[in-house]
Image 1 (cartoon, rainbow, N blue to C red):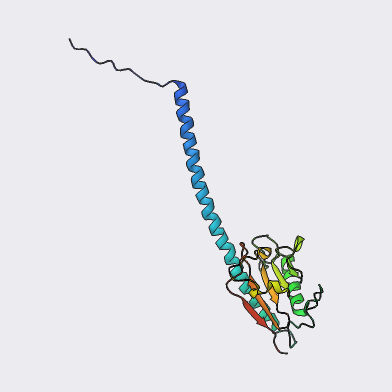
Image 2 (cartoon, helix red, strand yellow):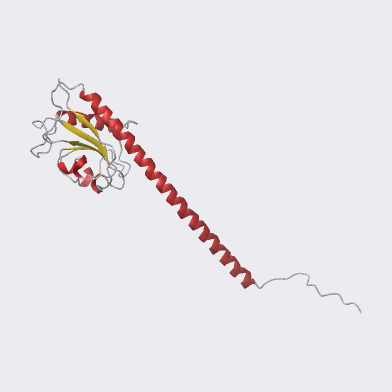
Length: 204
């Protein structure tokens, strides 16, 4: 006698089993998404840092060109004269040229000029002329710093050394005893730029 096999019309798992598998699948999906999100954030962070450094590189070159252009309009034999500068350490006695540059840059920022400089790390647009270093309070990590403090000189630290107090800043370091200014930037990790522009006084 032929007997046909018994084939159930449908099969089902207990509700609790389906729910457990769904939870496991969801946890796996969340873990995968988290991994890819972390990888994406790392990539984006890296490219953002590269972009911010590129902005600083462009800005420091632009600032140097502006300073060099303005210097020709000054009827003085010494742009950064120690007699007019802050060699005595007294604040507010910076040379006329640095004060002129500060006024021009401040006005540009106040007018929200697209050419104004901004610190990509702190977001500051402040331009500071100060012997004090490092800077504190609202002057910390400005967009541009004019200073004659020896510790801010380009050669004060080795190229790979960190300068955390100047992160994201364009620095104009006035050389005490010499008619010269060094123009460079410090990136977001505190490392100074590989290139330093030097501006010397022009004869009248």
